[in-house]
Structures are given as C-alpha cells and as structure tokens.
Image (cartoon, rainbow, N blue to C red):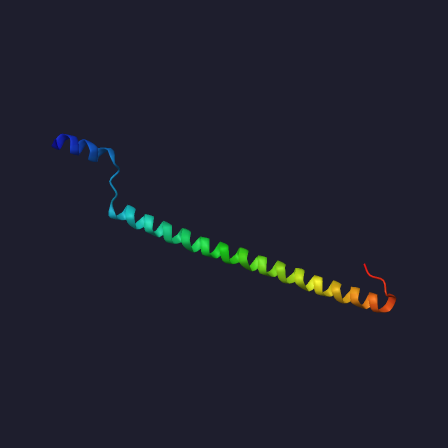
Length: 74
C-alpha cells in the first residue's frame, strides 16, 4: 500500500517555495499587464468616439447653415 502511494506521489511535479513565489509574481505581472492594456484600449475607444461626435456635430452645423442659406437638404 505504501509503495502505491509513493509511486503516485512521484508522478507529480513537486513545487518548491521558489516555484510558488515565481508563479505568484508571474500572475500578478500578468494582471497588471492586463489592466494596463485594457486601460489603453479603453482610452483609445473614448478618444475615437469623441472625435466621431465632434465630426458629426461639425457636419450638422454645416448642413444647418447650408439649409438656412439655400433651403436644400443633403
């Protein structure tokens, strides 16, 4: 019975404290990288959306002035 248990235990990789520490550091690093990338992508989306809204408002004002002057719509 004890031989069976030791054989099963030998099949698995034994983790040392250094391995656990390195794994935790890697997970924390990946988490920080994810947060940074998410923040950058979010800011890019907000910037693009803001530019799109500004362009739409500018085009609306031009169309409004053109309609007032000529009475013709797009």
